Length: 104
Image 1: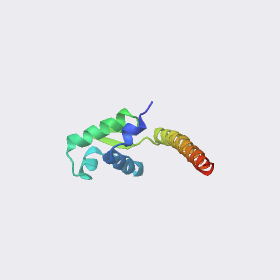
Image 2: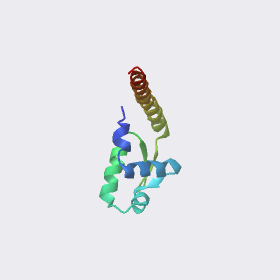
Image 3: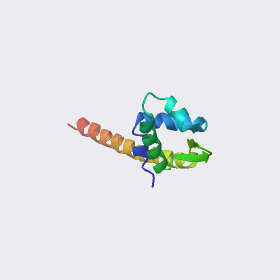
Image 4: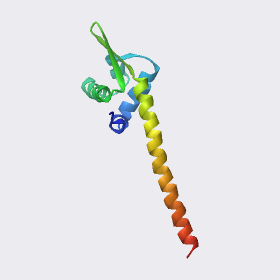
């Protein structure tokens, strides 16, 4: 299963995901959008490919990247559920704490 946290932990990878959600980009177009080196961008692309969040299409000597929307949406829904559970637990703990304070 995709480690969505690994994939979105870095702001550069988040920007690549945002860019590729709009249209396909070549690796060189992605490199030109940042102030870091081509090898550094390649490492970010590799992580996103390993986590199945990007699709890669080769045409001649060029690689085109775009967001894998199906995988992204699946993990977005999972994140929403996970965060909802965390927030619900925090609210229950806060309520319990406030009720205990009222009883003092």
